Length: 267
Image (cartoon, rainbow, N blue to C red; front, top):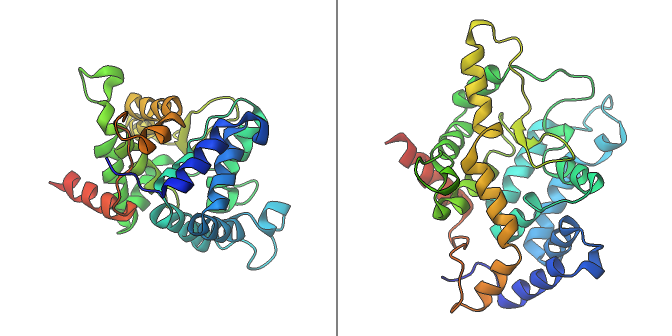
């Protein structure tokens, strides 16, 4: 398979992710350094940092114009739509071994600005899902996620290995939408949208079924685990095509893939 990055950048990313001395063993820091080394990745990353993590992170929620949620979400979507998937996914799915690393990862891609200000209660998951289904932007992404990360009975971990990259791509496509997922805590890799099911009444089962697409999805869990298990050795495979693991990001744009997956889900 052809790789998506230039060999020189792949070598740099491989060195960064494999070097404990330069990053203190923090693979998220290594991934950030690799993104910084790529002009496109760094430009897009700087955009969402400015939109989502600027003065709002310092507690300036009451100041006009500090956090414009629509701009923050748009910048997050642009990062995953236009950035090299190997780099954007390295940042999003980097493995953490400490609470500090996990908190940084959690705040980076789904900052408070993408949801609501301090003290705001999360909405019902049914409300979040309904907002997504009414959105021409969010609905096809949600359909793509449901189709790509659907558990498959009879396969290892309920998810065929070849489906892993597609599942992670569809998951990343939800960031910056009404059902933006995020890591739930700093001690695990559990993810979920920012929503709850406590006030769902007689629709509690329906609400929990939607939330379980993220919290109890063996295909998504398996894809994230496989990514961390293969990374960064998969980069070496890209550099040496004769020894390929089969885990490769497509060369077409992320948005093209998401659109195709969404259309497939509608059939």
